[in-house]
Amino acid sequence: MNAYFDALRALVQPIRASAWELTLEPMQHLLTALDQPEQAYRAVVVTGSTGKGTSCLRIATALSAAGLRVGLYTSPHLHLFRERFALLESDNASRLQIISQAEFTETAQTVLDAERVLDHSFSTFESATALALVWFAQQQIDVALLEVGIGGRFDAVNAVANDLAVFTPIEAEHVAMLGGSLESVAWHKAGIIQPHGKAISLPQVPEVWTVLEREAREKGAVLTVYDNLITGMGRGGFQTRPHDETAQAIALPGRLEQVTVGGRSVIIDGGHTPRAAQHLREFIGLASASFADAPIRLVVGMLGDKNVAAYLSSFDTPNVHLIYTRAPSDRALSHDDLLDRYRPHAAHVTLIESLDDALRSVNQADEALIVVAGSLRMAAAARETFGLLPVDDLEEARLTHTIFEGAEYRSKLG
Image (cartoon, rainbow, N blue to C red; front, side, top):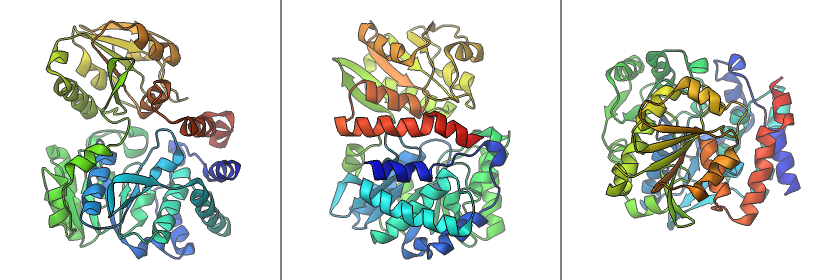
């Protein structure tokens, strides 16, 4: 395991929003130095503000069920950095096979060697994207599902000339990098549309659709809206077979995940946008009709760059008990900050500074349903606290958190 963590530490290079480069050239040079691994298979690039990871999984499952060997690259990870790199075999579409520590270590070394030759400081995400593309080529996949990290136009994933661009619902997010308006966010995401390419989208609000249509028109691309992305994939030139039972069986953890903890119903969700809040609200109602009016305890922690008021207002009803706490991140808001951002009108609110204490409060809760939400960091912490990880994975997760949250990481930010 030491060699793996040495490779991961070498790969990790965070950047500040102010240092984000609006160019794909370094990434393109890196792929050239790696002998263009992305040209060995077809690629589908997915962007949006909510549902990207879940959409990637559903599409990958449908492709796998149709007999294709599929690579799946998503981010961020919940517990293990290796979760970002996975395969779906055509003969076992019900199981995700993530990259092994040995494979990661070997492939990371290949990427790091190429980066040294280029003498450029690549971000964690750029290096991870290159690693995924190289590993997928080694695994001789048929098609890769690549989830955009931030935006799209200047995202490392967009250095790949995709065969199909996919858009999930777009909202205003990551304003420090993508601009302060919905139109500017949409412009960044629209950049994944390829010249004379194909693109499909779930329904969008008019302001976003106008931007996407303009981008497609300027590039001579075909853009079509679908209510169902699997249908769109089939009409976009990919053979698919819906496999809903399998998709449900390998649903991404921490995304509207329903579990039982100590005999209590618990929902864990890492969504953090206003639309994600609406999805969670709807899911709570669907999980059991009795939850519509029954008491709900919502343990919530959020990062500082999110639309906190719009998110939390979705749960401001008399039957909700909000527990404000701090998510495990140096970018997280404190419990007091959350109250400053949104003071409930109808919901009851309790401030608990310690996340550990907030999660342990579930054991004495009187509410019929427990929900932990607000960020993927919260989802990860809840899953680990509630014993949802194998012991070996828990130790790897602990060491991974140290790399991404410790003093060494902060020192790299400068």
